[in-house]
Length: 217
Image (tube, rainbow, N blue to C red; front, side):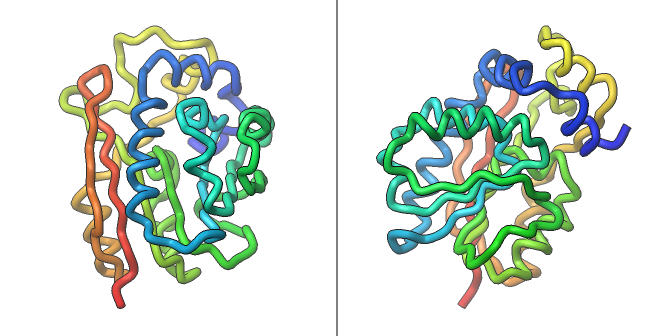
């Protein structure tokens, strides 16, 4: 089954939330996202796109005050995920935001967009196409958090118990990890230089790699 179809018709929002809570990645990704924000050097009100935002669980680990300076656009291809994300955003008073269904590979969101922050998204899409779409829109900063595995190369740890629809995801889907060097090389070819990098370990012998690229010139 096509990976995009799995995300829209198989994975349930509650199961995804439970899975992310169990694997310990959401608080780490929230920490890396906040550190990345500090390096954006964008003016107040700058518009930031968060594609493939899912249920927005990392918002549970973010102080809303950190988000208030910017205008946020959260998108996903699954409207059920966005319903849960919107409930989380309701607990973030003062944060300017829009949540809408959209495709990371072919974004139709209105501009201008100053930055894209993609958290564990590129592994689940055609990442070359997604990067092309963002860079062709003239986005000045592209931040990505990708996953690196120290042992088993699969996205989901083979020994970890999964919720029912996430188990179906493991059976049906074959997401591929994005090599850090390949990502940086492709963005360099599109005129973006690596500005900041950080990594942090998570359970199951994995690490989250945060990369912020800025358009040259």
